[in-house]
Image (cartoon, rainbow, N blue to C red; front, side, top):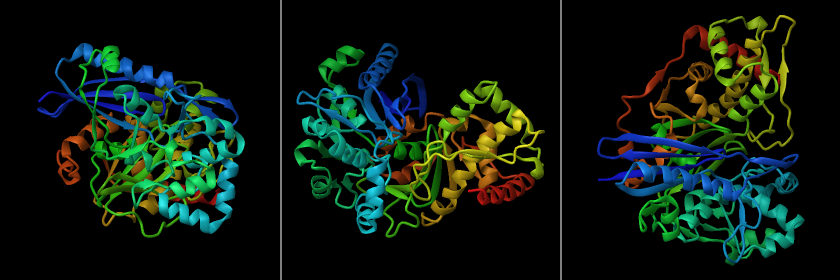
Length: 479
């Protein structure tokens, strides 16, 4: 058996691993970074060519190091939008999840409670600017000619798959995060798209199963050095792949993921009959499974914002400083931070930025401010955790993934703030590994509950968890 290449198309980087199924080891890890850019307040875009070149450059590095590649397996960030012309070339840039140009469209839909509820139940996606559906509404109302001139309306993943294989398709996993897909029928919401956005079915790509297999196109083979005809497995979304890579099971676990944004999610067999709060979403994992949970806009990006704007130190130095004072349990002199730099997605959509520090004193230190930033992100997640933990049939384990898991102090912090044991797989490339493991499981997710013996275990400490329970209640009062 040869190697499998996992390609994780993230918001700020493509992460690629080479996985050896024979010994169940990651033989190589590499990544290429790219950044969304702001063209005006609340409006963010990304260059398709930058992401495409990052993918092909990483795959070229793989080809130079390995000659026995069996397949490329893909996952991608959810909630991206791109218009293509008749030749399937980009008409402008990719619009990522953090773009907020559609605030007014979301507000209008939200005011019509029946319409908002019906769309939520049908698509699994609450009214929120992250979803391409509402961005399509914005173009319909503000740049109708651009929408009209588009031959196809696709996602970031659809476009990269096309560049790799010459086939323009959309998998049901990533498509279900668009707000344009009926998650029960697993088909596009043709009527709603036509009536609300004037979007005809001819502009939507063909939907395929996450188990579909395409072949590497000759032009892509030439660019990468990989062999023409190499299987390209469509696979799943990064949210689903991240949960699988972290070690989540079906109906028995939660995944806490903190990258640029943050999420708490669980894998279930059926969508919720009722959504406990408006901000809960549900996406398709595959034909037999769903992921449901809550997302938080204010994740790792907030920590980056703090480092760039307010800190005298780099990330690693700040983390070390927070580690040193973690056991200082002085409730009276603790600072608080409310991390809503990008507004709120939970418990319901509110686009108004309202970040703030509280309880600052003349004696407040650099370290205390840094600690409060990480705590604020974690407290916000705790609100979602308390709701999502009731959604699986049982809760046997909580697993963690995402960039912030590399900070040991963060893991200690969240296990005590949540007052729950948290497991962390030794591999940091959760989604890239998860998408391969999904393919190798042939859709049998119960087979993936093995091999958890290498996980790091974080258990709450009574004194620290008691301190955080008290501080969390004070934090809630300031919302």
